[in-house]
Length: 124
Image (cartoon, rainbow, N blue to C red; front, top):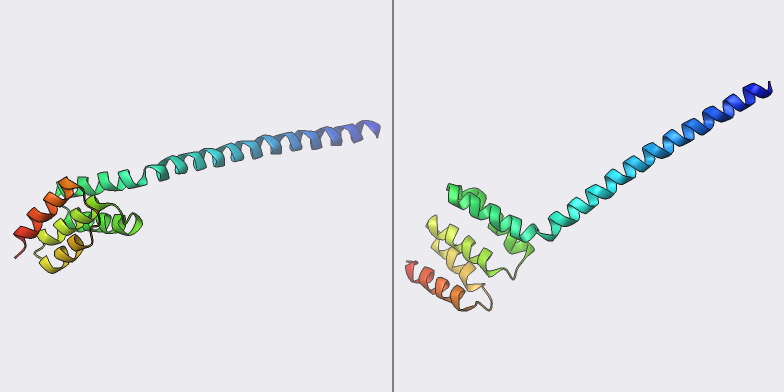
């Protein structure tokens, strides 16, 4: 009887140990996922810009427009995204929308101002 009691205690300890190992493994996986997500979020603006330019290079204007539109909403101070979105509308011959977006670009640097003027001069 005394021996059976120790066998049960031993099994409980083994199960507890297995549970702890399993829990720690799951916890480590969750922590690693959070680290990965944090790294991706810190570069999200650059990643979206790169993807939008990639789609633009492929000629996928719809996907390009969506990406730049999202960027304009998430990062309203990103003038390059606004300019690129205006360029997309320009390429679709939607000059009114293109001009509206260009007018919403705030505090452009010299290079951006030059690009805006060039695009506005091409708008009919």
